[in-house]
Amino acid sequence: MKKVIIDVDTGIDDAIGLCLAVQSGQADIVGITTVNGNTSLEQATVNTTKVMKLLGREDVAIVKGANRPLLRDPHFEVSVHGNDGIGGALKEMEIVVNEDGFAPDFIIEQAAKYKGELTIILLAPMTNMALAIRKEPRLKDWVKELVIMGGAVSSPGNITPTAEYNIFIDPEAAKIVLHAGIPITLVGLDVTRQTLLTEADIERMNAGAVRDFVQESTTHYMNRHFQLTGNRACAMHDPLAVGVALDKSLVRTELHYVDVETKSDLCDGQTVCDFKGWLKKEPNVNVCVEVDRDRFIETLVDTLGR
Ligand code: RIB
Ligand code: CA
Image 1 (cartoon, helix red, strand yellow):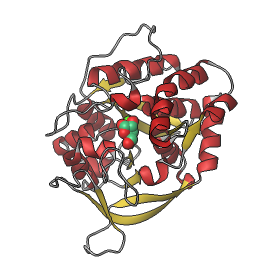
Image 2 (cartoon, helix red, strand yellow):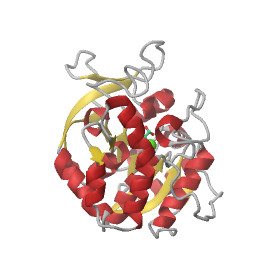
Image 3 (cartoon, helix red, strand yellow):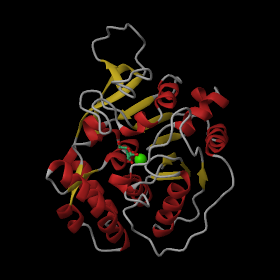
Image 4 (cartoon, protein in one colour):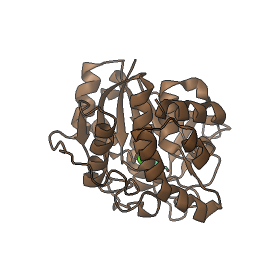
């Protein structure tokens, strides 16, 4: 079992990523931290609590974090995730939300407790991780690795021509995290856009509450994807990052220097990958450049149907 903390702005694909992590049986989920992003911190925490109740894992700690980016204004992605962040699914579910603790402190506590063992999977704007790093610089020695859903190094952005959403919402936080000295695998749009879940894939899942959730929550997401591409499918951005954290053989990576633009009107939030070494800076990121799309989708369909 791999000890993990999963940082989320639940969101539809965050929710499916949590389903994959829990149902894989390969993740020892030390806790889940929430942050504003796709939706508000409050709503992301409600959604996360609902999904973990759906999965029968109300035992897992859920700890709230930042309610806004370090410097920028929040920017919720209603068009993709719906007003409630999970496409209107689980509306009737009754839950109790944990109000105790603060995500950056939780990350520090668990990293100190599990020195060298902890993989932190970042599926949202990286405000919580940046705050934790600034408060406890020794995290670079304690955290085993970061697996980050974010960025786009050889393909267009999904919120501006050059920026991916998680980076764009808090580029200052992303810059802090990318340069913290912790081993990083970056699962960017270059590979996540290839891992599209279709309605036919969902039909192939064994019937059950999780398939019903995936079906209901992704309807909104697929409608949006259809508007943009004419194709009824949804990109499994966050689930792929979870998949990679559990099985690196799903992707091919290259080690390069990656930085984040934070001072540009045109390219704010762009992840710039120095493939040719022009900047002569120490490489800091294992960039995902290829993915075994079929094997990942088959694993996802099989696992969510368990
Ligand atoms: O760009 C995709 C990322 O932004 C995903 O994490 C999605 O949930 C949104 O947060
Ligand atoms: Ca997310």
